[in-house]
Image (tube, rainbow, N blue to C red; front, side):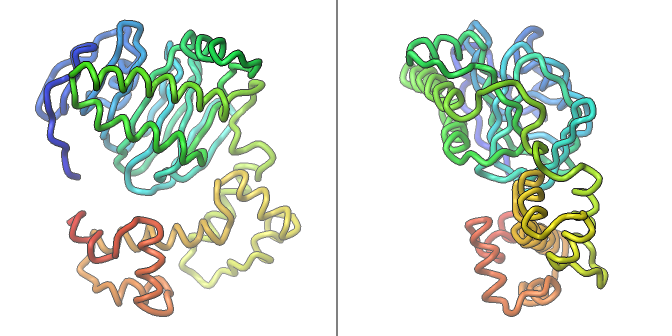
Length: 315
């Protein structure tokens, strides 16, 4: 995984650089302290104001641990390799796909266990509840300010806004600082509009498939055997009509069964391109694409790159 060039840290507070080069600890009491403890590293870039509000860019290894309650809301935009993940809070289970265009929201005071099997590249916003209240008051809105818990929730607008902050974390001038403050308010406004309401359990599981049913459907879709992966078979196994199965599967997984299978095949393609010397033609054939052209088109729609270009970048 390539490492960004580090410049001088932000003037807001001392920033922690790449943990492989620096042993600078994250100060206790800051909202990124719990993330540093769980991830066992420090951010590539971080900029926080005295209240603890701010933005951090993390790159870390797979995660299988509990994130304890934090004093700020945490909003994350994913920027890494597409992958499946699982998040548990009590008896609630959310299974989603990390990819560009989705967000993760951890309301202040909440705790959950995360199981993420691959390395992660993510930009995090630390947002005090007082900031949400101030922005809501300035907008003169009656919108509830209870943040909804989100796991790999599609929201390309918030994702793009937050990922755009990563570049500004490297600058320490007045304009960079002003940009970060204005971007934080803009993100707070967007979050109030799209991610608030009455407190609920995990949104991706509401109205979706029971966790065991979802996992059984995913195992069938993943199977390399001759298992029937038709919509009729999947729906029958879940005890639902095809229409209701599709709706419930998308509610739980964030994608339709067809889109999930297409994405899974492309995840397999990434692994083969990265870890083997198989030709692009062989990879396309192994994954059941009718031609190399069809495979390349599907791969590019997902990643923005051709299979050959992607392989050169990751090998």
